[in-house]
Amino acid sequence: MARTKHPRTPLPPRGGLGASRVRLPGEEPSTAFDFIARVIAEQRHRHPEDNAQAVLERFAQGQVVLIDGTPLAPSSIIQPGTDVFFYRRPAPETPVPYEIDVVYEDADIMVVDKPPFLATMPRAAHITETATVRLRRATGNEELTPAHRLDRMTSGLLLLTKRREIRGAYQELFAAREVHKRYVAVAEWAQLCVPTTWRSHIDKQHGEIASTVIENAEPNAETIVRSVERLAPERETEFQRVHGVGVPLGAYLLEPVTGRTHQLRVHMCDAGFPILGDPVYPVVRGFGDEDFSVPMRLKSVELAFIDPLSGAERKFRSATRY
Image (cartoon, rainbow, N blue to C red; front, side, top):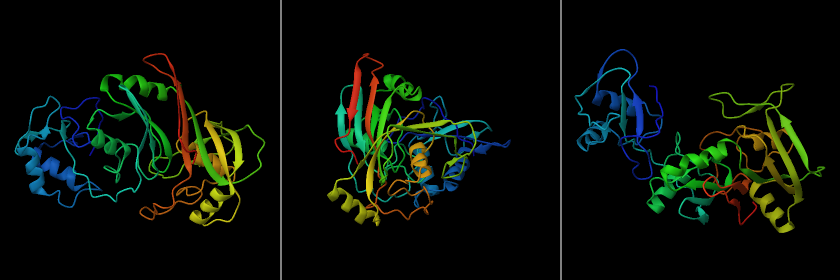
């Protein structure tokens, strides 16, 4: 069943989650109950108690509506192409045993240090265990929204807007790549001549977990390696123990010039230094095999930009590098 996006919905966010919008496909009409019950039954990740009675309760509470806010009854006839809004019920999730630290906050934005294993936005099996939902529930601000994204396994600085009317200005800043970003990756130590630039053509196919490097193709991804430092002996020993490796380890300061999917992870792996704890590069691990005590060692450590509202220079740094 096709899903579409809309900037505003007739149902407000609730419990940190926005309402879902679904469109009746095909050529045959359907009752609203049959349509919503079928959508829920076809969810790959759904709550085991989200049954027919739970669907009826949504209708009784006015939580199944049209785009203009008109509530539907279970027997209401829906025509093909009609958009319907309702609240999904997330499946139970394993709690991520890390906290989100607030780095900076004012009336407009919040900058946090996102831990690994916590997705930025709700998606697929990760709904409540996401930075967005956790922070909305903790603050009570249902309009709190990330201006950009970090991979679920990547930790570090994440900027969120606190009000709907300013959201677009900050999101456009990131979309236009007007934010200077720096990351630190921990991997096998190598004596590189720095700064150095890695360029390649990275391709990501829909449905595939990993991105790939296409040889002899025009580069579309660029990363600058600013420095490589050997880890301090105590830290190196700790990481070697946690990740089960015996090689010397280094911290790579990386600046992405472009923003391809998994770009830093792909470039590190392609250079021969896969990031410690990476569950995809060089080998894709099975879903559900993750160990929360063994995170991926890639962290966003710096964000700098000209504020789109005030015109002031902004720079945020993480308190820890990795």
